[in-house]
Length: 118
Length: 109
Image 1 (cartoon, each protein chain N blue to C red):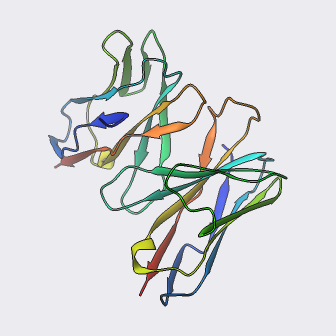
Image 2 (cartoon, rainbow over the protein chains, first blue to last red):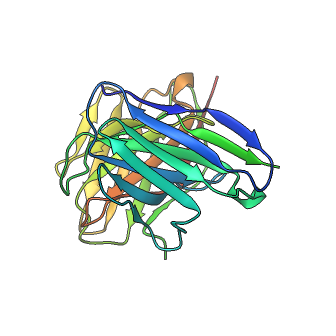
């Protein structure tokens, strides 16, 4: 199967700092990547869809100025949590879709990044 | 109402027994259906897709009931390693993944 990596796996930061999370598809090109957030015992919630070479599409209620997404290449998308606050503490997971277009049936998930904001 | 609903469990299952649970979805236009497995503090991993006619993969059997808008997962001959949270995933008409909150299964010796 396809491999998706995420870095860092865990980060602890002070309130007010910015944190960048990288998501890489290691053995395939991903024109579309997705960023999810998961709180304890809750479902994964889609935050945004990241498209290579264009602006990300954010889900309702997700602040695009707070969660900056850049998909600069076919194998890398980054999520930057700006001015992080304790309520941003969560498990952030990316996924990469192998097919382009509207069929996202094949999504491969990264191992996740656990963010703790003090 | 949530898009995808699951019984959170936990389902405590003796080793070797059978366990089954459902997932209901609200959007009748949902396109594709999956079961993912998520271990504690790990990413989801695809367990199996769910096809209209039902499908089986080893000890795992998935069923889809479009009329009643639910999918099911049955695990036979449960192993200790089956202990995990099972996530129901439904794609909407745009192809986006909608996750359930998961059903926790605990297999006991």
